[in-house]
Length: 111
Length: 115
Image 1 (tube, rainbow over the protein chains, first blue to last red):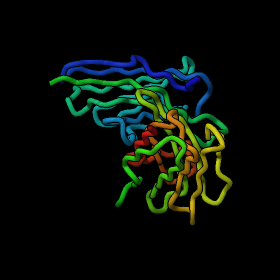
Image 2: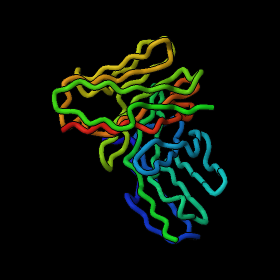
Image 3: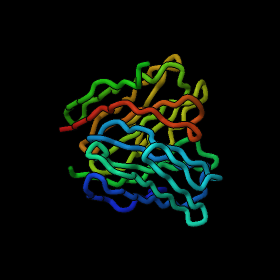
C-alpha cells in the first residue's frame, strides 16, 4: 500500500480562497516533501520539511508536520487559477534512498 | 541551466514489441530515478541509480523491465515484449545528492501507449 495518502482526493475552490491538503503516512520518516504536477506530466518540487521541523513557509505555501500523528498538511493561501494542479506528498524513510509518493490531491481553482 | 529531458515525449507501440525510453539528467546530478504513473495514480518507483553504486532495482515490476545508466549520465529504460498494462507515463528524475534528503527534478515524461 502507499506510504503517503493525500486527503481529499479532489478539491474545488474559488480564486482567493485558501486550499488545505493533508497527507498521512505509516512509518517513521527522515523528511517529507510536497510536489506539484500540472497536466499529468513532470512534477515540480515545492517544499521539504524535515522530521525535526514542525512548520515551514515558502511564499504562499505553509507546510506543517506532526510526526506523532504521522501527518502533514499543505496550505496554499490566496489561491490563483494557476495553482490548479495535482499535489503529491512524498516521504523519505530511514534506510531507504528513494521517496514514496501518495496518489495526490487534485486541486481546481476557479476564477 | 537545462533541466531533465526525456525522449520520446510520446510512444505508441504494438503489444509484444520492445521499447526504449531515454532520460538526460541535469549535469552533475549523481542520483537518477525512474517512476511510472498510471492514469489518475501516484508515482510508482521503478529503479534508482546513485553514482557508481549498483542500482536499486527493487521497484521493477517484472524481468521485462531493465535500465542502464551510461557514464553516470544518460539513462535508458527498456521494456521488452510490451503488454497493455505497461501503458503509462514514465517519469525520470535526478537529484544532486543521495536520494531522500534532496529534492528531485523531474523530466516531462514519456507517455507510452501499448495497443
